[in-house]
Image (cartoon, rainbow, N blue to C red; front, top):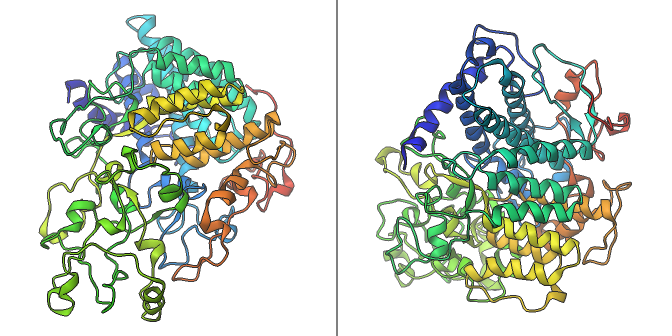
Length: 624
């Protein structure tokens, strides 16, 4: 790790003090707190202070990926690819029709993190606006230095607004620092916000470089985000041009072994690409934007990433019994002869992949992303409980077996059936973050997933964004070529029929490539908006429009086509929850507490939720 990288966390921690205790700093929502002595007037007095503030913005992006019930779980369960797998509580977001309301608990590990997204994005927007509003108050070594800081802040603000408008729709647009409490916000049209973000990102692309330290924003990363905004606006040629900035820059897909285990012949390029130690390597030419999080750096995420805890099945919960004798067959102790916890992590199955994501899209056996060693199936695990040596010795050390219907029925009578939480496949190469130093009195904590750098934008997605733009334009052969670049690196069978390429093809490849990287609900909503805005028929034969977007949209139709949990009303958890979703979930509810505090303005509620009946026309232009 180079010297610059080592200092990023320390600088960010310093800047965090400015933001958290600053005179205009918000309490993690739209409404600022009272002033303190740590005002921006006192702290923003040098280029170094501004750059430290930018480091904090980078750190604040990573909240989404890490921690128990990480926010990305909430993004994932509003999609075709996953549901909330916690089966021993009634509170998780499974019955979305009942659980997702403006007045519900929208920020808890055992509920969902919708409110966390709202507060985090607006906190970041506030922090960006402080930088942008004060950038001319000091003397800069050069215009290039100032513009680099400005471009980075504009990127971060655009990133947060891109997410907000595809999570919540029309939202308040804040473009300057607020120095007093404001209770008069109004919603602004999503398209107006996106147009402003396009302008801001064009400045960012023009003023950023690709000679940045890993963890900072690159020109390629800004172009990548610009492509997403262009797609959202229906500007497909502009999106292609933005993708080309990254694709034709100093980046390329990693196709040769590299990094920490490059000499291990039992591994492959897919494994290398996702090693924590390799993501921010200078030789990793695929990383456009990476957030840094390491045990050795100040300000690292407390208790580690916990990615394995979120994404690995709860194989240790006692529901997996030996065939025939039906004896408990699994132990999670790290001291066992077959230490499954150390090998795979001690998961609790929060992110339950759907059959679509874990089975149906894997159409060939050459794809390294689903190959033995990279991808884990439950039958790859072994019965490791020492008690089996006497109670059912035939099965000790043997691979798990999928139960027959008769055995499933028998197990159900014994109260031990939980295939929702404890029996599904997962991408081991993505989520195996290592076990770290094991403390004997807390042996379970490190195997949840230690601290790790994480990709936010990667060139593989840029190719898929350009492919998507080509599909919208009807240039399917070009789209197929870009998809095949990603597939070739994974040794997957190449597509050969341009006529079969459509938006579904793009979504399938995104799921194969971008597990726990893409905010898939955001991207599904963006695509649903494009169908509604353009009237382009979808592959399902339907056309959509903006007028009835909340009741008839591609987002919902895609989920009901692919997600077996939501389309099968007979699926029920141990706690009695059914899995439900509705078309209006294309957007999340704005927390009612935010609306209630806004006594001198009007924040519209997302359509389909209580309170939307009082909506007024959103602002159709930027109001100074």
